[in-house]
Image (cartoon, rainbow, N blue to C red; front, side, top):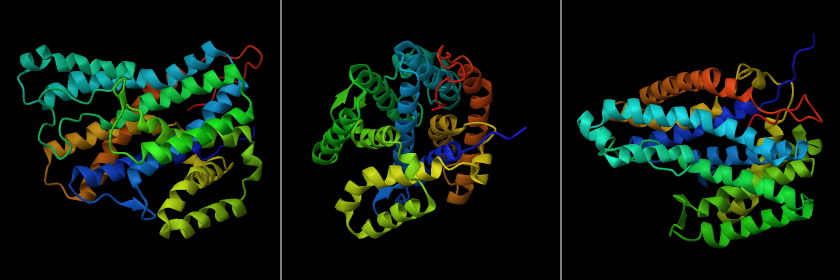
Length: 346
């Protein structure tokens, strides 16, 4: 039997989650965070890679089965089961073990139960008495901020698909998001918070999402080759000394490089994660694992810290995938017109 064709997306998403862990490691240890091409913190780069890939795959999911209920069933099964378990483990296991409060005070504290709001994507970082005096204080899982932004993108994809689904509208949304990001979201330090989410991120991250969505609609994959990949990568290198130009060009060049590599078929890279997509679990567990290690071993050197953080986080990500995420994804609804398609695993 012919082996299943693999692409590099799972490995690339795991690498993006690894960039987030790597970048956060420096922050948690009080060290300067490394940057990509003298332009972007590595942790932020990892988030942008996630959004570019998500834009491509979620748009694919909608266009191959533009059914509102099935679309959101797939999205919910991808996001919420693992998030629920992660939230409960943080609240019921990590919190009681590491809180400076007695157990009765911890569980009677209103903030403990408010932490359950994370399940509804109303992101809450604080658990009473937990990580109070670390360099990133009172933050149990700071990485969760991106999930409501991501889910808002799902809503927009469905809304635009129901309204029109035409290419020109997607181009307009991408342009509007880019303009709002450049002229407002990244030009101001003042947060605009709605539903516990900084709306600036809807445009900052959303621009990369809409670039990925456009690339799917334009069937950009047909232009992917070693040559075009190299040209886009070299263009990014050449723009390093021009921060503003690099910023503007990154909205197109970064998703192009990411997707050109990620959608490559029959690569040995894809085989590295052939057993599962561990990226989501890695992303949502890295922050609390890293904070816990800093709390328990505050003097740990960076190499040891990175090794221990990666090992523990990857173990939890594997357990999450095989024990929660994969079984839940088997419940994704079929498209009656195309029974073999159950939606992109994103």
